[in-house]
Image 1: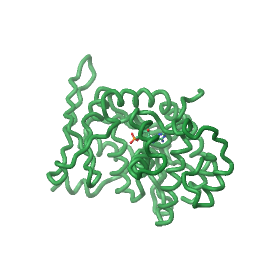
Image 2: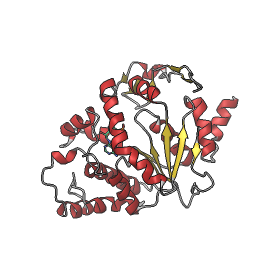
Image 3: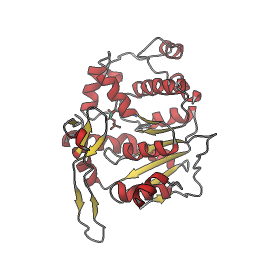
Length: 298
Ligand code: AMP
């Protein structure tokens, strides 16, 4: 993982902390003129179809913990499946959206400007994200973590290039879901303010038409002890989700091609909710979840 901490040096990102030598090294090489403008990213200048499951390097032994990336539109379920896989493979699940939300709730110097960007559905700048990710990786490294499943990063070609410059990504899972389901899933998302658990009150029932199959996704309701503590993300309103989808197509979809051209992209069309999708995803990844099998058999 140490190699990933070269991220900061590669990007030349402005540090939010000056306590660490790597951050200072970067700070001094920084050429940002208007720090406020730089908080927000600018647009770029430019059924499971596994792209050869036999070709993709599905690295998963103890000596080489996986280094995977999850791509996909807002609401597709990156967090759900990345966190399940992280438990199964015993590697950290690192969601840059969570890092941003932690920064927001810390009421640090950046938080009010970041809140405005995030709540409007825009991307924060590559520098800020890489800075937050570097700090997270460094903290993990100090605890002896290795391997990772990244969720929500990279989201721009520049982020993908920086990541490629510092480490080898084994596999990029590109989750896909029909757009009508994406919007409903974001709007129905609820989070327990106490334990951080993710739930969904939406019941998605898309009728099949013109030869396309229907899709049913049952709500994922919270246990009773979370039910009274549910909150909605401020960026999960219909208007903001539509903007987030627009930004995804503009800024992040090119990242799919970046990895496709390198033979690392696993395209996975989610067939429905967790009960249908999880076993199929495991199958596509050549993995088995013994706990899941046991609970299904119980
Ligand atoms: P998410 O939870 O992944 O939907 O992320 C929430 C918000 O955090 C996004 O809408 C962006 O404003 C910000 N964010 C998360 N990851 C990134 C990234 N890799 N690049 C830029 N902004 C990000």
